[in-house]
Amino acid sequence: MPTSEKEALVAELRQAAEESKGIYLAEFRHLNVAEMNELRTQILESQAHLRVAKNRLLKLAFAGTDAEGLNEHLIGPTAVAFCQSDPIAVAKVLTEFGQDHQHLAVKAGLFDGMILDEQRVAQIAQLPPRDQLLAQVLASLIAPASSVLNLLGAVTSQFILTLDAVAKKRKSEEEE
Image 1 (cartoon, rainbow, N blue to C red):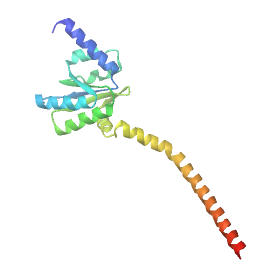
Image 2 (image 1 turned 60 degrees about the vertical axis):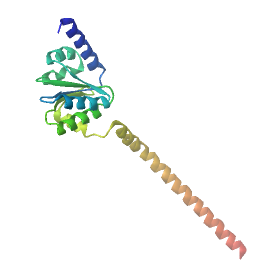
Image 3 (image 1 turned 180 degrees about the vertical axis):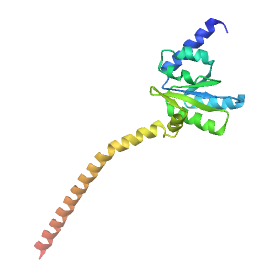
Protein backbone atom coordinates (compact mmCIF):
# COMPACT_ATOMS: atom_id res chain seq x y z
CA MET A 1 0.00 0.00 0.00
CA PRO A 2 1.47 3.41 -0.90
CA THR A 3 2.46 5.70 1.94
CA SER A 4 -0.33 8.24 1.31
CA GLU A 5 -2.94 5.48 1.66
CA LYS A 6 -1.35 4.31 4.92
CA GLU A 7 -1.29 7.88 6.23
CA ALA A 8 -4.97 8.28 5.35
CA LEU A 9 -5.80 4.99 7.10
CA VAL A 10 -3.84 6.03 10.22
CA ALA A 11 -5.68 9.38 10.26
CA GLU A 12 -9.03 7.59 9.91
CA LEU A 13 -8.18 5.17 12.74
CA ARG A 14 -6.97 8.04 14.96
CA GLN A 15 -10.21 9.95 14.38
CA ALA A 16 -12.26 6.84 15.18
CA ALA A 17 -10.24 6.30 18.38
CA GLU A 18 -10.67 9.91 19.51
CA GLU A 19 -14.43 9.94 18.84
CA SER A 20 -15.18 6.55 20.38
CA LYS A 21 -16.78 6.06 23.78
CA GLY A 22 -15.11 2.66 24.00
CA ILE A 23 -12.59 0.58 22.05
CA TYR A 24 -12.18 -3.18 22.17
CA LEU A 25 -9.42 -5.34 20.72
CA ALA A 26 -10.12 -8.93 19.72
CA GLU A 27 -8.03 -11.70 18.22
CA PHE A 28 -9.81 -13.44 15.38
CA ARG A 29 -7.63 -16.34 14.27
CA HIS A 30 -9.34 -18.83 11.94
CA LEU A 31 -12.67 -17.02 11.63
CA ASN A 32 -14.09 -17.68 8.20
CA VAL A 33 -15.70 -14.99 6.04
CA ALA A 34 -19.27 -15.88 7.07
CA GLU A 35 -18.38 -15.71 10.78
CA MET A 36 -16.56 -12.41 10.31
CA ASN A 37 -19.56 -10.95 8.45
CA GLU A 38 -21.88 -12.16 11.22
CA LEU A 39 -19.65 -10.46 13.80
CA ARG A 40 -19.54 -7.22 11.79
CA THR A 41 -23.35 -7.24 11.51
CA GLN A 42 -23.81 -7.73 15.25
CA ILE A 43 -21.28 -4.98 15.98
CA LEU A 44 -23.05 -2.60 13.57
CA GLU A 45 -26.38 -3.33 15.29
CA SER A 46 -24.71 -2.19 18.53
CA GLN A 47 -23.87 1.16 16.91
CA ALA A 48 -20.19 0.43 16.54
CA HIS A 49 -17.92 -0.62 13.72
CA LEU A 50 -15.27 -3.27 13.41
CA ARG A 51 -11.97 -2.67 11.65
CA VAL A 52 -9.07 -4.95 10.90
CA ALA A 53 -5.75 -3.19 10.44
CA LYS A 54 -2.09 -3.91 10.83
CA ASN A 55 -0.87 -3.58 14.40
CA ARG A 56 1.86 -1.17 13.32
CA LEU A 57 -0.73 1.19 11.83
CA LEU A 58 -2.94 0.90 14.90
CA LYS A 59 0.02 1.82 17.13
CA LEU A 60 0.64 4.90 15.01
CA ALA A 61 -3.05 5.83 15.17
CA PHE A 62 -3.29 5.33 18.93
CA ALA A 63 -0.12 7.36 19.67
CA GLY A 64 -0.95 10.42 21.78
CA THR A 65 -4.55 9.34 22.49
CA ASP A 66 -6.22 7.58 25.43
CA ALA A 67 -6.01 4.39 23.37
CA GLU A 68 -2.20 4.40 23.48
CA GLY A 69 -2.36 2.06 26.49
CA LEU A 70 -3.81 -0.62 24.20
CA ASN A 71 -0.56 -0.84 22.21
CA GLU A 72 0.83 -3.64 24.40
CA HIS A 73 -2.14 -5.82 23.35
CA LEU A 74 -1.53 -5.33 19.63
CA ILE A 75 -0.06 -8.77 18.95
CA GLY A 76 -1.30 -11.18 16.31
CA PRO A 77 -4.32 -10.61 14.09
CA THR A 78 -6.36 -7.86 15.70
CA ALA A 79 -9.86 -6.59 15.08
CA VAL A 80 -10.78 -3.24 16.64
CA ALA A 81 -14.33 -2.33 17.62
CA PHE A 82 -14.94 1.41 17.88
CA CYS A 83 -18.11 2.20 19.90
CA GLN A 84 -20.11 5.29 19.03
CA SER A 85 -22.76 5.02 21.74
CA ASP A 86 -22.99 2.10 24.18
CA PRO A 87 -19.69 0.34 24.97
CA ILE A 88 -21.50 -2.18 27.18
CA ALA A 89 -23.54 -3.49 24.25
CA VAL A 90 -20.39 -4.01 22.16
CA ALA A 91 -18.66 -5.80 25.04
CA LYS A 92 -21.69 -8.11 25.24
CA VAL A 93 -21.57 -8.83 21.50
CA LEU A 94 -17.84 -9.61 21.52
CA THR A 95 -18.03 -11.75 24.67
CA GLU A 96 -21.06 -13.75 23.50
CA PHE A 97 -19.64 -14.18 20.01
CA GLY A 98 -16.37 -15.38 21.55
CA GLN A 99 -18.28 -17.95 23.62
CA ASP A 100 -20.07 -19.24 20.52
CA HIS A 101 -17.02 -19.11 18.25
CA GLN A 102 -13.81 -20.29 19.85
CA HIS A 103 -11.74 -18.47 17.24
CA LEU A 104 -12.52 -15.02 18.66
CA ALA A 105 -10.97 -13.84 21.92
CA VAL A 106 -11.26 -10.39 23.45
CA LYS A 107 -7.78 -9.08 24.26
CA ALA A 108 -8.43 -5.73 25.93
CA GLY A 109 -10.58 -2.65 25.92
CA LEU A 110 -10.70 1.04 26.62
CA PHE A 111 -13.75 2.24 28.50
CA ASP A 112 -14.17 5.60 30.20
CA GLY A 113 -10.43 6.30 29.97
CA MET A 114 -9.42 3.00 31.61
CA ILE A 115 -7.56 0.15 29.95
CA LEU A 116 -9.35 -3.14 30.63
CA ASP A 117 -8.06 -6.69 30.40
CA GLU A 118 -10.25 -9.47 29.04
CA GLN A 119 -11.68 -10.33 32.50
CA ARG A 120 -12.81 -6.72 33.02
CA VAL A 121 -14.37 -6.67 29.56
CA ALA A 122 -16.27 -9.84 30.48
CA GLN A 123 -17.47 -8.16 33.68
CA ILE A 124 -18.66 -5.13 31.72
CA ALA A 125 -20.46 -7.44 29.32
CA GLN A 126 -22.52 -8.78 32.23
CA LEU A 127 -23.81 -5.32 33.17
CA PRO A 128 -27.39 -4.51 32.21
CA PRO A 129 -27.92 -2.22 29.21
CA ARG A 130 -27.43 1.53 29.68
CA ASP A 131 -31.17 2.30 29.67
CA GLN A 132 -31.81 -0.29 32.37
CA LEU A 133 -28.94 1.09 34.49
CA LEU A 134 -30.36 4.61 34.18
CA ALA A 135 -33.81 3.32 35.16
CA GLN A 136 -32.34 1.62 38.24
CA VAL A 137 -30.52 4.81 39.27
CA LEU A 138 -33.68 6.85 38.76
CA ALA A 139 -35.73 4.37 40.77
CA SER A 140 -33.25 4.53 43.65
CA LEU A 141 -33.35 8.34 43.55
CA ILE A 142 -37.15 8.42 43.54
CA ALA A 143 -37.59 5.78 46.28
CA PRO A 144 -37.06 8.14 49.27
CA ALA A 145 -39.50 10.70 47.84
CA SER A 146 -42.07 7.97 47.20
CA SER A 147 -41.71 6.77 50.79
CA VAL A 148 -42.28 10.28 52.13
CA LEU A 149 -45.34 10.72 49.90
CA ASN A 150 -46.74 7.38 51.01
CA LEU A 151 -46.16 8.30 54.65
CA LEU A 152 -47.85 11.68 54.20
CA GLY A 153 -50.71 9.99 52.36
CA ALA A 154 -51.15 7.51 55.20
CA VAL A 155 -51.20 10.29 57.80
CA THR A 156 -53.73 12.25 55.76
CA SER A 157 -56.00 9.25 55.25
CA GLN A 158 -55.80 8.40 58.98
CA PHE A 159 -56.73 12.00 59.81
CA ILE A 160 -59.71 11.89 57.43
CA LEU A 161 -60.87 8.54 58.84
CA THR A 162 -60.60 9.92 62.38
CA LEU A 163 -62.61 13.03 61.44
CA ASP A 164 -65.22 10.83 59.78
CA ALA A 165 -65.47 8.63 62.88
CA VAL A 166 -65.84 11.70 65.13
CA ALA A 167 -68.52 13.11 62.83
CA LYS A 168 -70.46 9.82 62.86
CA LYS A 169 -70.20 9.61 66.63
CA ARG A 170 -71.51 13.17 67.10
CA LYS A 171 -74.33 12.51 64.66
CA SER A 172 -75.34 9.36 66.55
CA GLU A 173 -75.16 11.27 69.86
CA GLU A 174 -77.39 14.01 68.47
CA GLU A 175 -79.99 11.48 67.32
CA GLU A 176 -80.26 9.97 70.78
